[in-house]
Image (cartoon, rainbow, N blue to C red; front, top):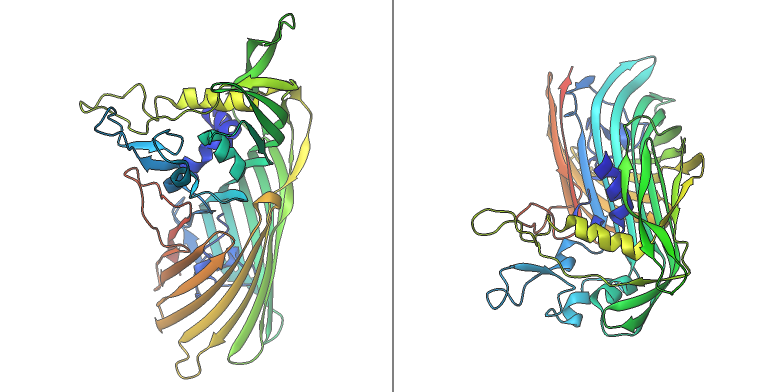
Length: 474
């Protein structure tokens, strides 16, 4: 738990290497009897009843962004010359500035990442419609970093850097959801889902109006406003004493670590999903859903702010990404070994001081709007085409997507499809396969086909998706 709290605070820079929005598999929106289609639109039901395998019924991991690990890590140009590191970061002075910054956008550089694990779920017919019950563990992370931050980290030679707003968000909660859908008539079907939310942790870091002025070689005078708000049971900041650079001003304390004493419920909230489908005729059907319209009320808000008008910062420094030496021993300069040193750089950069518990606060969880249209191919009615528009409404971490799908059900117990999407970050291809004979259901799909990965199986692009599940069907 201590590490979780620490990395919520440190996520401002470190999140690029470890991110994992998962409300459902968008590729499965038009797939009949995809058991968890009710996560995308609560109006959808299923032909079969089902009970999920614990923690295996629906596992969904997705990352989205316009930069990734491949933009941060490079082949080391000094490998075999005076260095045994095969990989290095973009901050390495032997990596040219043009190459180092080529992967970053001149506006906001963003990553959204989510993990959704269904701990237990069931769906059954009754009460005049179709009903669902589920317990899910959800975590989401959002990062928005300005281009000027990477210029500063690379130290392109400017003597002054104006760094625009920098935002990081992370939250984790468990939801208990009750859903019901039913036909109103032969054309209209509606559904709703009530969710009880049990908050584990929420962290928000914001740095705005940041300016860096060169004082001497590799030393910068920083000014700006930084705030960290963390809501988590037992969470506290740990501080270290530091002297002011101006003679006679004495010392001040700044946050250099965090601690978590115990674990428990950090907040409670509620959310609502609403949805409907409308069959225009035998060939056309339209649908709409508004998901996660709700909030969590947190019992505490541990705040840290930068109290110094100006402070000195030694800059960011390149680190190794090689874990072990040739004999298998962990290297002192490895990425893993230098994790604490990297966290120290982050703490110095933010220059935060503990402001104590500010009391309770209420936050939204981010809503999603889905709009769909489906067409049955008249010459082969087992073939369907669909278009899904998805909009995530979550402040700095909002995004939109349009996805065109082709789905086919050649057998009563087998269906799937392929699709193409364009969103706020990239273009992608997806697919889904759903096997659902009586007695069992297995599905697997991706909204974004996995591209190149590192040796540690981390996608070099921040765009990746996988959704799979095992369920008993009857």
